[in-house]
Image 1 (cartoon, rainbow, N blue to C red):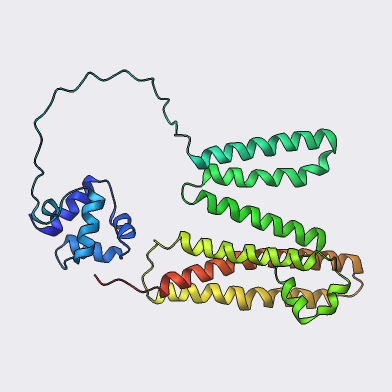
Image 2: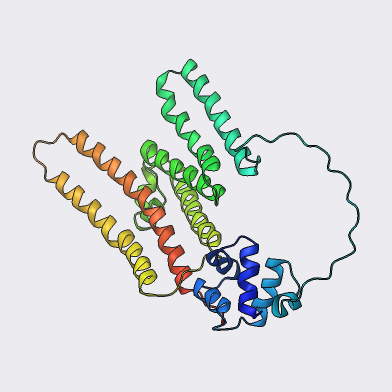
Length: 291
């Protein structure tokens, strides 16, 4: 039995696809396919990593040598266990967090509805979103839940006080605004900017094991994301504002309200776009390990 045939057999026995094995080894799926067809041979570092993944020795991996079996011993009779309901899932940390968040949000909604009326639901119901993401997302539930919290906080601050992360840059260019804005405005804007940077770094780190081949498709994807963030989104925002400013007979308060909603939307859309652009760029540009 060749090395490639043995790798393919061990992978199938472990119930892994070529994509899953390639992701754990930080190589491309084509590399795994070449190994299994004996078109190439993995380097020693990858061979050692394969033994750890498949839980076999190096001899078993390379020579297809069966492991020495210890003399069989009589096993005790299995203890009958409680029947497990069909379709039940273990209570993981993410599911527990999601259950707690939904419970707290539900209680807060009921109390708010009883004490303050229906209007309070606009603040309490969105709190259910992180809990739903913890329950629904199978991969990186914590990342997506925190993303939802950050975006909701930025939307609330932008709608209620007109504060955003980019306000800090505005204060640097126009310090006279500090005299008219609330004293806490620059600190809140700075905190939002730090939160945005940390979320982008967390997203990049979370996807560090993902393998993206460096080809025309992935480079075009990265370029498209940057174009959406730096060109398309600002251009659409400026176009809408210009159309509103020259619109005849439009009440001033309506124009101001629409522009406020537009600023909130573009602010919320720009952060995920920036995170996606940075993440894809890092994955495409990172140094490939030799096969």
